[in-house]
Image 1 (spheres, rainbow, N blue to C red):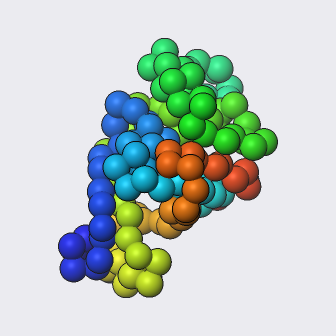
Image 2 (tube, rainbow, N blue to C red; image 1 turned 45 degrees about the horizontal axis):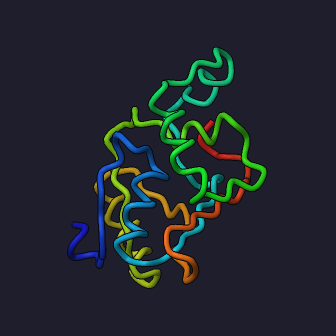
Length: 140
């Protein structure tokens, strides 16, 4: 489905968290990106669990500090930063496509009962820079 819908690049989101894998894609493409936190799908209860227990995996902290110079976090809260750096994911994929192709892909995913969301966009600029725009997420 991804190939026929015009997906240009893809990676699984695992050990480096979402921002770590996005950074790797940006290094390869020599681009920057902006993430809209309000559009990032979250597992039900993930943010609440992190906030209420204040437990963060050491690997999420390592990812956060190793990416510190590449991410402009703006006013995003600590718990969301840790969720974007958390290597414990649900096996999701990070895909890149031409904006003109995204509606068809999202419709295909919806028809197949697969969750998909546009969480940001690729931009020109210093390679590997990731700007995180804070808006209240809709998943919790």
